[in-house]
Amino acid sequence: MSAGGWGGPPPEPSYTGPPPTGRYGAPPQVPVGPPPWLQPAPYPFPGYGPVPAPVRPPRPVTPPGAPPHAVRQPFELLMRARDWAWWRPLLGLLLFTVVYLVASLAVLLVSAVTGLVPDLALLEVTDPAVLLVTNISLIVAIPIVWLCWYVTHGMRIGWSSSVLGRLRWRLLLPWTWRALLTLGVAVVLGLVIGLVATDVEVTGVTDSFGWLLLVVLLTTPLQAAAEEYVFRGYLAQAIAGWVGRPRAGAVVAAVVTAALFSAAHLPPDFETFLYRFAIGLAFSAVVWLTGGLEAAIVLHAVNNVVIFLLAGVLGEQVASADPGGAIGWLTTLLGIAGMAGFVAAVALARGRLRTELLSDALELPPVPAGPAWGQSAPWWGPPAPAPWGQPAWGPAPPPWGAPQAGWAHPGGPGWGPPAGPGWGQPYGPGWGQPSAPGWGPSGGTQPGPDRPQDWARPPAP
Image (cartoon, rainbow, N blue to C red; front, side, top):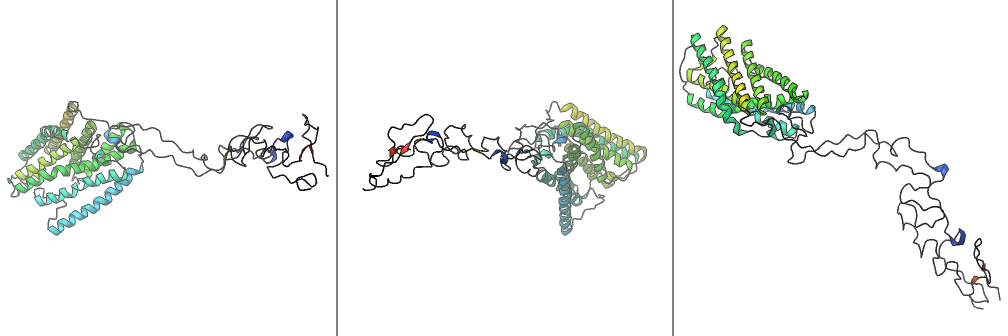
């Protein structure tokens, strides 16, 4: 008899999946996860895996156009922006020293080539060429200070001028006539007293007074501004930034910069040192009162312009004369009184002139912090071990005895062998049904609740 009939062996059924091992054709139950004796012990620290190297907390970054300060700051603390660091002023001072020395040597080289060699002792204050070279050698400090602000602090150059981040030009004229009425008058009175009390000869207007007037009016205000940018626009802010507290920082910076300012002018005696020290304190006072360099620049410029012009009108000997003794102290105290009068005038007028004293500020949202020092990042190493019976990653398996929808593995449902009409259901046309004619259940034998289907093989012919 042909194959598949009663006269020969039945054909082999086609493969339709793994044989069932559970009751009534249920799929095999495969436990998920390692056995209990291979389950890893819980890691004693947060996270799982090796501890990475310490990660520094991220620095706050100022968005373009936003003020660099998280809180409103006075002029003395403008350096203390969001990314303040104690080493930035040191790096700025080093940069200023190196660049300024190079620039000064370049100015001296140009002056030597052109024949305008200045007198370093500053004795010929009425010589226009000497005064021009001297002023230019000081004016180059302004862009160098701006460079230090931009490079070492990452801030706009205008923060060296005022709390608004720019020079407030509208304040220059009001401060100028007040400085002329206070310090300017005091300087003139002191010179007149010195002429009366001494035998200094008045030689009259110098031969080059026209050139001197031009140099004084065009370069002396810039020279005064350069000294203010160096001492009050950078050095004072660096010192106050290290102190950190507004009032204490302002006082310490005022005293230190006034002493350095007086020493930089090489005073020949204590009286001259005291006078210039008082000038430095007055400059710092008006900066603190107005929130910017405008008043200090004007006071400094008025003092220098008046002295140079009087020297050009009356002669070199009048400008360099020192009465000494009681008369000398009288003229010094008169000059200090003129500066104190200007400080008082500024204190009275700052309300009407609406001088801003604090910078703008913007509080940014907190920066998402990385992992704490000594802790592992969430992405570092394998995940923490899961309890027994749950997968370490992917969907959890169904309870024991329930049909599984897929491998409890990274892929989730659908990961693994494709299911037929249902996982655990017949793969082909009737799982457990005869695949060929004559192959089927034995007659009369029905499956019971506690026994599988009985299968019978057709008898041989």
